[in-house]
Image (cartoon, rainbow, N blue to C red):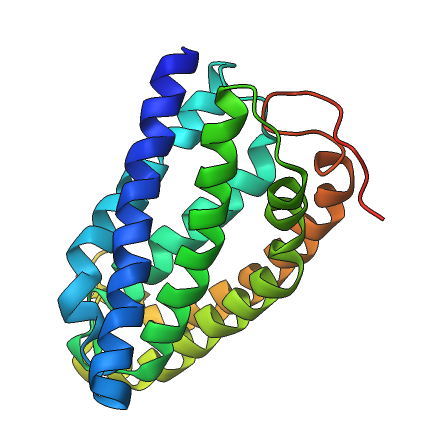
Length: 218
């Protein structure tokens, strides 16, 4: 199982490293012009990595990963909803700068996390990397939540105009689901989830991904 988890972390590391490197090279080569087509150039790999990340919930459920289920479940589902439901379904949103910001934050966090995980599987605990893995999320996760909320907000006019995912059932049900209202309610869930994750992070950060007591940073 340790070998399997190492291979999984390696695959995720390669995918997110490719995305992160691609974004930086494109920005250095084309400047601001590269931001508008971020989704078109790396969206496929990003979607594959996020779909693959859903295995992490299974890893925790069957006990081969010692991470806490609730924070990880919230983080993965937030990304899947924003990426597949909000961004992927609205072509007009895909060219917004917030997509580039969101992808940058996600991949910066994941490159560090999967690097740490791979080394931990081999019993290597590099203290600066350990500190970075458990500390980088403190500023970047709230920023990613704000970026997700902003992406949802700018998508609302398009969902209202095109009626995407809005459903109106015929009689005798006479029931309709107006998807922009669903997204507005999800915004509240998004910020509540952020609060709950940080509430749980206090106990989670005392342990590394292998269930070992973690050294406190000064």
